[in-house]
Image (cartoon, rainbow, N blue to C red):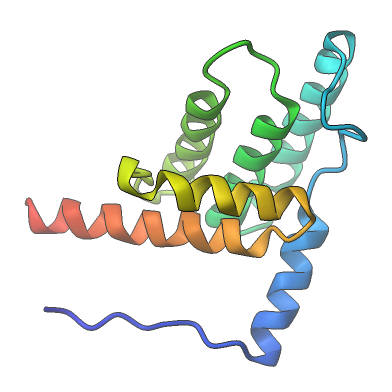
Length: 143
């Protein structure tokens, strides 16, 4: 079995965590966003993605875009699926494999989204990164 590395809490990781937290798109002041504001905040999100897709690592851009689409919550149903699709489109554009989030990890997925709601986006980005690596392993094993 291949050996995979783990990231330790170092000064570098603390700086990355601060950077990730600063990357959150500040578009929603309240938990529930009035429908008449959806167009404005979606434009801000799209603008943020376009401004950062070539500046930031694809993992960060995709995960932050995913979180913010879920946070905007513009649809009655399918916000999570839409956010995962957006994230994976960003990954593909950045030449990364898609990240499949398994049903067995749904509770952790929701927990890390809840932490992101409290302005700690690092656990969610880490979760997405782990999902990306897991998906890549499955792809390689099935070649």
